[in-house]
Image (cartoon, rainbow, N blue to C red; front, side):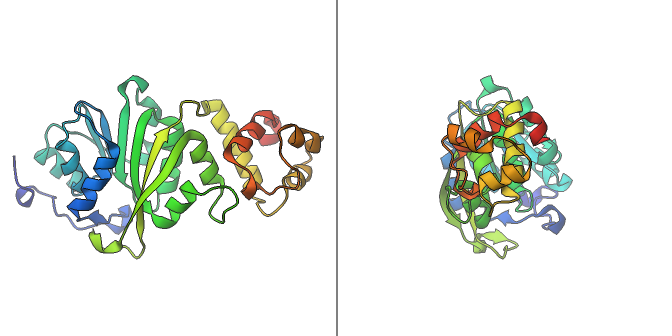
Length: 270
């Protein structure tokens, strides 16, 4: 096996256009992969491996299928040369066929996600992919939104949608000094467990539309939002769902949003 010093592209400069900040601390890389709890033979998918800090840790655990998604052609080529057993897919994680991951394969997903795509990417993965657990490093601010509870200032549509599909937990923070180049913000590592009763594809679409409707007027009361959108009998419907019409969207728990999304008419959510 070739040393990274002799692999073309192994130390290619970071590209700002791809949001690249390479993790350089193997202790943190080990902690991230440990949180994935890979057993020999488990199938693993890594997003944006970059120079391979997490990859080195994953291969030591003898995974079954190991797929990595990398947009940077030079970095992808370096990984193929150094780890020929890995399946390298060149492409954008935002356009990857997440629904194509077979449930029976029990995938585990990991990645140091570019800050500019982390939130929409996690939104897609938790609702489309069949996975056992996922561990992602994101900007701390995004991480706080992902795990926020109702009533808090960080709680919003992203919090509700993700927590309706997965159990999310923040594991630890990561300082900017362990990256090259150094970002100007602190990062956080989060772990996700897919829920057995997550919404179906149709239910997820209804939930997404409900959240868009409610959080675009998040400071308004729910009764006012529905009244403003010409929904009749909104008070009776809300009370039947154990929702106070005077509540604001930011105070409503994920399970209440799921219940609300199931009863709102489709033409109302269009």
